[in-house]
Amino acid sequence: MAEQKAPRATTNRSTTPRSDSFKDYISSQWADRDEVMPAAREEASFAAARRERLSALHRGRRLVVPAGRAKVRSNDCDYPFRAHSAFAHLTGWGSDTVPGSVLVLEPVGDGHEATLYFRASAGRDSDEFYADPEIGEFWTGPRPSLAQVGADLGLATRGLAELDGVVTSSDASTLVLHEADPELAARVEAVVAAAADAEGLQEAVETGQDDPATASSSVAVDVLARDASELRLVKDAWEVAQMRRAVTVTGRGFSDVIADFDDIVAHPRGERLVEGTFNRRARADGNTVGYDTIAAAGDHACVLHWTRNDGPVADGDLILIDAGIELDSLYTADITRTLPVSGRFTDVQRLVYEAVLEAADAAFAIVRPGIAFREIHAAAMQVIAERTAEWGFLPVSAAESLEPDHQYHRRYMVHGTSHHLGMDVHDCAAARRDLYLDGVLEPGMVFTIEPGLYFQPDDLTVPEEFRGIGVRIEDDIVVTADGAENLSVGIPRTVAEVEAWIARP
Ligand code: GLY
Ligand code: MN
Ligand code: MN
Image: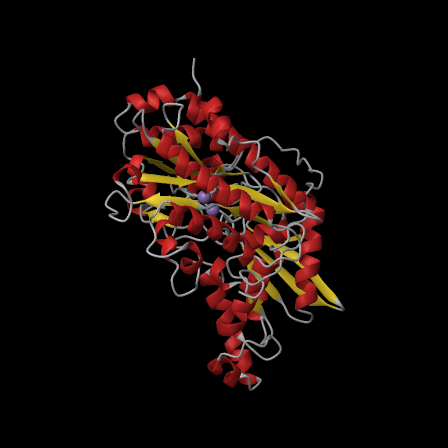
């Protein structure tokens, strides 16, 4: 049952010397290291409070929350590793998480005891440090010790090898967050299913009951994913501060792009330069981008998730840039600005832009604790319907279009207006509809407001001068005690602000 590492696909060309004499030689004559103990990081106490909340939902049950492991891209190349957001949220470990780590909450008395299992630094008495290209210190750098991570995160720590004992001793009440590490989850679930069988709970598995009191493995997995998502619906003070920082550095990335407009316009794949310039800022000031950057010039803006980014950026174009920087803590911004590359909107571009801005402002105006999340979208749609009706694009009046069976204005904006935002760009995705779309706003919730208008280049319902125009304005909002704050209001968004931002000497 020991955790196995699959052999890499390139062992057929390994040149690592295998002789004992080489091993003895390379394992010796290394200076002693001082083990520096870090102070607990600021988020450690917040993560402890989050674990308490999860613990209160599942008294008496063992909870297993894996970070996940690196995913092979091809042969011995991996995709960049990124810990599952639930794991990062509950541990405070972000971009520096050691792949394969697992948080276990063990039921004890009236609560849980948390232990973090991870692959700690290997000594020079094993050959890992020089002979293992996947995780060896000479290949990927040193890993922290159990004591260092324990001090850093304020958690009890154990070596990953000890996780076997957790797996084999699971019982029918054990919950594992399946999607974070399906391989580990399958091992736990096999033990859980056997235990459930022994305890006569098999019927619950087969009928898919989702009552945590009686459900077991396959259903219980979903329960933990859901609860971890719902725990993040309201952000704590540390998380809101991270969101502020993510928005600030994202704004810098947008300014960098504008500063590069001359080079961008001159290059046949200017959209790629937009992506590259933004990515430079993301890597410099954060961990990476929170999602693939959308750099959509001209009619590419009508493709909602245009990430190919291989087109030119012409002087008279609008360019829609949807981009966000993820910090080392894994919190990400999600901002869209639609910019006239020349520095000045044409009349028709301005008309469309002002309508989208009006929709965004109307949505923002109603945000306060106590309203339903879905009302934000309704407020934006009211404006979108009114403007497109006024311009003569709809077959009926705005009021009729807004009726549930009509919705003709949605031809020009098929996406939603808002989604929760945090560690994941589409955060809290496993939360129940009752708490998300039909949920009620609370202080500390963070989400986007991102209406748009997209007139496809071949849309015969709109005059020719509108065709190929796509505008989205996306801001990141936090609900306050009596209203809301637009975290990204400092990134130019009105026509005058945007034109002044771009104005080049
Ligand atoms: N960037 C993806 C979105 O706005 O939802
Ligand atoms: Mn968004
Ligand atoms: Mn976006």
